[in-house]
Length: 190
Image (cartoon, rainbow, N blue to C red; front, top):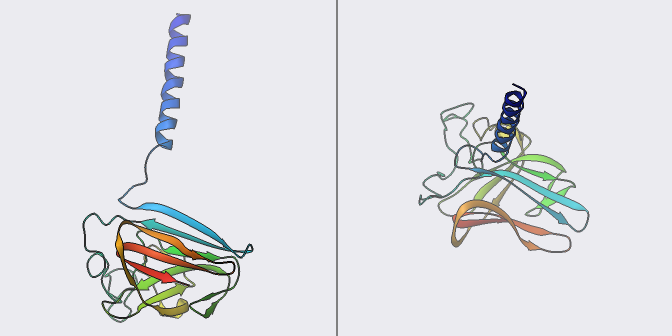
């Protein structure tokens, strides 16, 4: 009888341990992976970017999966009168966190955490937006009055990239260029 109790006790402990390990190794849901990248600038300042990284999966990205310009997403505050930009990732807002005041394309932006949005263009510069609203799902609740900074940036052609990525492509002692890279486009921000 004592042997059976020990056996079932060990079996129960093993199952609990196995269940705990299974939970630790479960991948995130959906087809996008949460990603995070951080870079120090000049030994003092830090830039941290948190985003969901979708895969291209053979799809046309810009002008396909990601429509050009601002669009009525049919949910939240997104309407024909208040169209939304792209959330510059998948799922939750993409966010940029700056430890110090910075210049983005020569324009001032205060230290803080910002939602990051992009309105791609078929021709010409893309609109890049840093929003004071950084905690919504996607860009369904985008409001232009929350814009902290808007700049226009030219996208560049690049080798195809399967996963949406943010990469610090030019690091200097007191500055850096971060690029959003996905599909066959690269959007560099200095």
